[in-house]
Length: 444
Ligand SMILES: Cc1cc2nc3c(=O)[nH]c(=O)nc-3n(C[C@H](O)[C@H](O)[C@H](O)COP(=O)(O)OP(=O)(O)OC[C@H]3O[C@@H](n4cnc5c(N)ncnc54)[C@H](O)[C@@H]3O)c2cc1C
Image (cartoon, rainbow, N blue to C red; front, side, top):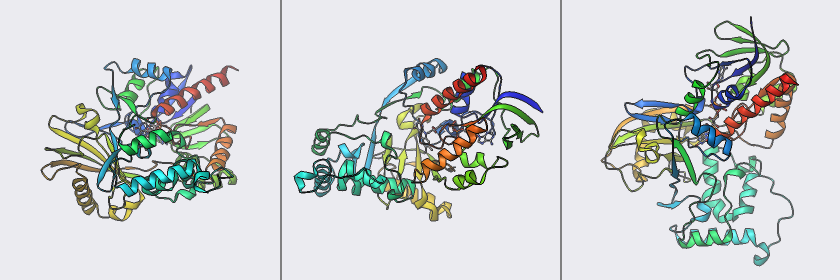
């Protein structure tokens, strides 16, 4: 038995940030051999640095901006987003709702009329909605109208999540979806592009080493380094004892979990029936993606940062290019991509070779690859817990679980520990807030 004031599960950005901001004794345990969790970078092929799909830093708070700059001595490079939507065999800039110019005229008309109906129903002889939207589909139609919903928002989100949008809470993804003014929408329909809308219009990325440079830098700055290749395998919350995969038992005063909530709950002894029931209600998606490296001339759509594909005839819902954002992530004359697939591709996943051929053929059809590009590698990867499904049970189930854990002296936060939709800055902020909570709890 060893004793620690705080036991932290996971050296992703949340766990690392907690350890970094914590005053006092802790043990940080990570089951993998290096820090970073989802924010790790892998050298998939000599000279090709690939993150776990695109991991771009959208920093909002001054504190986090300063911290990240301090941690990364080689610095950050700032980028302006170059993202597009592929629809009706053409590309329009993201966000779709403010950039319909270039689509077939009847699509543009349907989107514009739909938006006008949604914003000014009385002009169309419609009564304004009496109650708040009941689900995410209704939220979309209420904010953007039937045309934008039908052509992009509904098919894209259903392809991404593999569920009907009526199953989701109305405010799902609200923070991430820009709601342009009528003026912006009209300008976008006429070709006066308003591309710079939204939370990710500008972002930063490490100059060297991929996104994995950030967690590695935090880990280097810790007073006590993480213990790698060791997992927490069992937790007895009443006795406040955790068992580790190397056989050690750790007595803790506070525990911070950052592992996906369903996985963590499966480690806990004596879970009350109500909490078990709530745990069964938690839903999430699995994302499979290819990391892909090519050498060759490319085609018209090779150099976009990322591309959304709402149409079902394309097997992927999004592609992105590490090297288009940051050329240093691929060797000279080469390009690298991530190609993301969700539930809809499940049948094809049973035949990996056919899936590869289908992906390559769809990428050529979309003019991301040219037939003269030489494929250097193509690796299929999986993110078992990618997107939490914010269904109508979400809020209650999550609260039952987090309240129970809090009663046991356990904090659970980060994107998957807190079962939310946060980005890397949110993860670092969650870690910092938990450290402050733990420190306050100890001194009060
Ligand atoms: C497809 C996709 C794209 C994304 N793109 C972006 C983006 O562009 N920008 C952005 O800001 N954010 C992005 N994110 C979100 C970002 O990845 C997360 O917010 C962030 O990495 C979460 O960090 P975390 O520490 O909470 O979780 P993780 O990174 O999952 O860390 C948890 C750690 O716990 C470890 N662990 C698990 N179980 C145990 C155990 N039993 N014992 C010990 N260790 C354990 C894991 O190995 C892992 O290292 C994206 C996410 C996804 C899914």
